[in-house]
Image 1 (tube, one colour):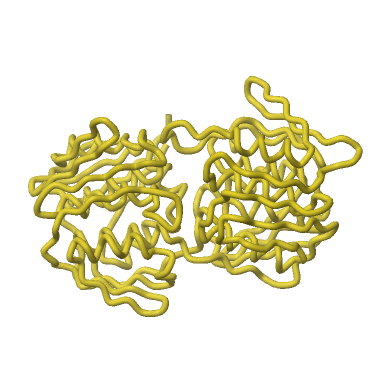
Image 2 (cartoon, rainbow, N blue to C red; image 1 turned 90 degrees about the horizontal axis):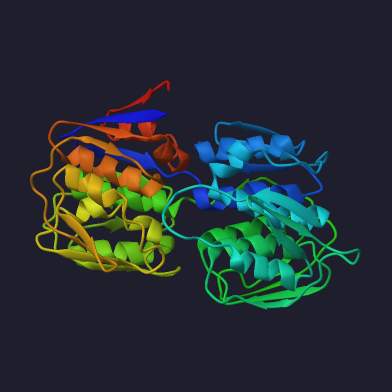
Length: 422
């Protein structure tokens, strides 16, 4: 277990370069096993999720090599095998191996995934999609077993009952190698799905409509990587640094950004009164603005991302008045609230509505990072507090934020990560 020690009163200043999108990466790595040739990615974030996915690849006899932002994966000698339980349980996105293995072998056995505890995230829409493609699904106590008959997967029309990023990606991975045409309706529109479709299309897949609410896939027999795929910048990491810079910065330049991916987030910062200088691929935050309270309501892309409702909270505590957050996607995403209150944060949750008040007297404390975004929001608050904050279970932060200690050092902030032996 790791803990992060944060001294308060540190102001952000300098530059930070955003890494590749975590939510793209955790889909692209399972997608790589669909290829009939070795695959290369760059702008890969150095996060624990990547290393866990590499362990899963190893269990399938797939070799991988990672360093300096480049990841090479060779699936040409892949073998069917049980996936390692520890890696599966620690990583929600491991369920993308369901669709990838189903597309590759026509069958898959995957343990129920773990990841962040932010409330129910059922996989019923994934299973609905697999069944529509002709698969048989058996759910055990701790695993899902998916098989197909001798005819294999067949294209189908699938209408999802709700917009789900996970189901969209998983069924897409299976449909790429299915026979015939698959039409997926009411799908998620996130930039990470476009990134995945771009990668697959560059290998010879026929996917149209990614980024809209209808995706059409013409199945293919073979996928060949011909070039290195560059992963898009992480809009959640970018939003996190922008929030912290606006709350507690004096001149911060956030580089390697696609501003269009952050439109709803940027709109809220502007509404608060944050001054931003937006260029084609970078955003400068002067800092020191007078901030007004706002109302945030999360929704599927292109709405305000649920992954940014916690990272924006430290900034809301600087506003002069009460702000409101309504997370329509994960209303149980509130485990950061008691930890913030322990530090003196004025924050409450009642009937699905989070209220955040101006919090001028924050003090360091021992707090717990229950998941990625909750953990990083506590880091942002710790920098604004007096004294030292110890964030326990900081492994969660490291799961989702690329080289965070090094990046904060470049922003004139010192963080210390300590490994505790149990």
